Image (cartoon, rainbow, N blue to C red; front, side, top):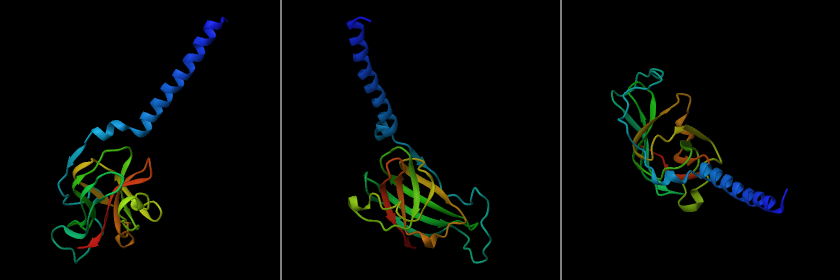
Length: 179
């Protein structure tokens, strides 16, 4: 092998490695999502998609707000309101209204037992204790609903977070107070 061919291979190796690192970094961070919005406008459901919850003779005829909170910003600017609602069939749903946050990779909606803290101190507290994922965030803007499983005891939770599972950080959160 000539010296010229050997140098050509050595130059290609760092370029190939750099391209691989850039490709993996783009896949992991998904920076394009910062400029892509997903808007969802769901109406409040009237019944659960899982079917009726166990019957209760004392249920009111319409939806009943059990708890509510206002989202504060953490890692990304986040606004909107959160409501825990009991539907007429006894099922429960978490409703995000007027949500406005950044899009990001692997965003989830969590019920947690952690206190909501302002600023950087609140960015990563939500996975320290008890939390229940209600699923992937459907969109970073708008109104959306998340079914709360029947086996979830709402008394165990006092906050909601928009959680980035990829980077273990809260985009925003709301403390829940009884309605």
